Length: 222
Ligand SMILES: NC(=O)c1ccc[n+]([C@@H]2O[C@H](COP(=O)([O-])OP(=O)(O)OC[C@H]3O[C@@H](n4cnc5c(N)ncnc54)[C@H](OP(=O)(O)O)[C@@H]3O)[C@@H](O)[C@H]2O)c1
Figure 1: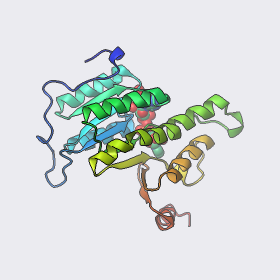
Figure 2: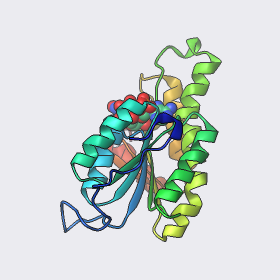
Figure 3: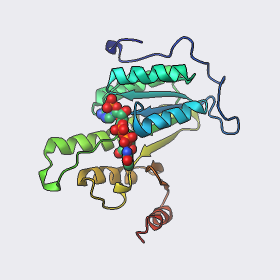
Figure 4: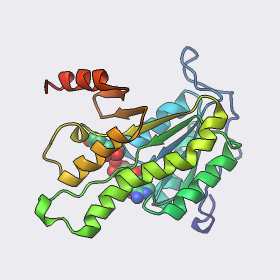
């Protein structure tokens, strides 16, 4: 593996080549590329494995280089085509570096951007500091927005680009999980003209009032 100074970790030499392996011929992502932010654990990790298992080439990022290297090693052993960058999505400069790497790894084309990174600081609304507000909003909302802007030329160049933002039910209905977290996820839901948001057990497409109403019905809110 490369050192942290290089801020980028390349695929192993024995990695399978694009188009050579997919676990299910009926549902293949061979030839497709994806950037999944925060792929070293949780939902992001599962998404990386799902996409790579279906044959896509995936790039992911996280702040912890040791965890990233461990995941990349594991994926390499599984024959998945996954590359990674150490990147803190709180930093605009690191967004630019990340997207430069993605552009270079995927030859200036990207099929899917999955904005998965998210964080929460859970305390009473009156107790949040300005810094805590900024941490949640920058991580959950601003980073996703900025990465969408940077990814746009690559998504357009692919001819079939799409953006997925991992949201939360807390962005749709008031839940006791922290008011800033809910606000950041609500803003994500309203930001994109066409945005597919996921919660762990429910998927919705925000294409207009009807689909939102349908979603709220599912939650028993109307
Ligand atoms: N888990 C749930 O029940 C749930 C429910 C609803 C919605 N969601 C949403 O689903 C998404 C994923 O949640 P999760 O629970 O799977 O998260 P998680 O287990 O905490 O994993 C977060 C991932 O993002 C990375 N990460 C965190 N902050 C980062 C930063 N500033 N820059 C770069 N990478 C960063 C982490 O690695 P490093 O720490 O090494 O950077 C890790 O790989 C979030 O958007 C969350 O709001 C989760």
